[in-house]
Image (cartoon, one colour):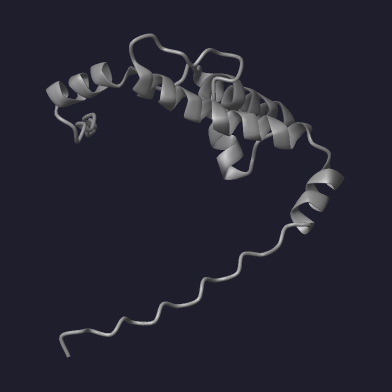
Length: 127
């Protein structure tokens, strides 16, 4: 019986450790096993109602840090990153709370983007 060896990370250990220390905001959001199972079930299209609710709650509250603080003293780049995560969560909550009719009207009233006219090549003064 063959024993499978764990796969080695493509990132060397020292580099991986430095990367995590330098970018603590990139650490995985707080999660447990049931959150990961719910995420996989939603992605596969097999999630039941409880798993869907669990995944959405985790996504908004933990991954997008809605209800949390994005300010990080002396680290504006980390605060900016956290604020970007919160921006996505805010839009998810907005779409969830907005009524379907008002969303449909909002998108129907938008004018489609018109393509920009092609630029004509400039005459080369050297010719």
